[in-house]
Length: 175
Image 1 (tube, rainbow, N blue to C red):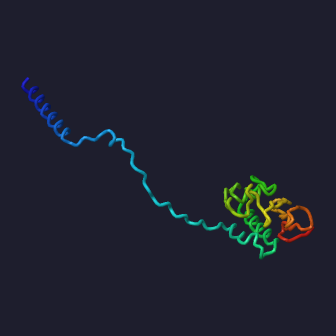
Image 2 (image 1 turned 180 degrees about the vertical axis):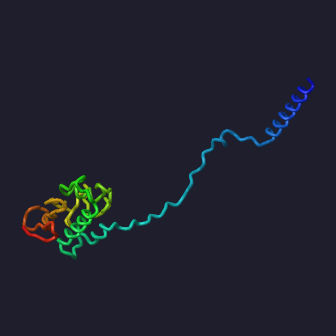
Image 3 (image 1 turned 45 degrees about the horizontal axis):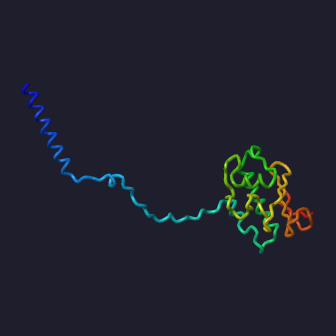
């Protein structure tokens, strides 16, 4: 019995010492425990300009008034030639017109490769490829990897005498 009393006395002394130490510490109030830290003010990361893609480099000067309008279509032709060189299975995403070609160049293709970013000036607000006068290009598929490109010209009316036309081989034609 004596051993039990000694153990009980030691436990009681330890408890009293612990409580004395605990009560001597400064008390945290409930609001201090739940305090929400203030906002951290940080400087925004500086935007690093993204370099142009290879296709965007080919399109540099697109719509420039100092160049003939056919040069715009030649630039698009070079980009589509590069597209068909890299995308080995275009049959999964066939090009049936402007909307399909524009989507493919923005990355909706078998490789998910972005050739031209969607915010590029070559696209209309609707996401179509446009000519220098802001009208959608007319894209005529003439075969696998063969596209005729047509601009409605300065009057904005397609299929008349001022149209600018580039055949699939990259040669200017007139109607």
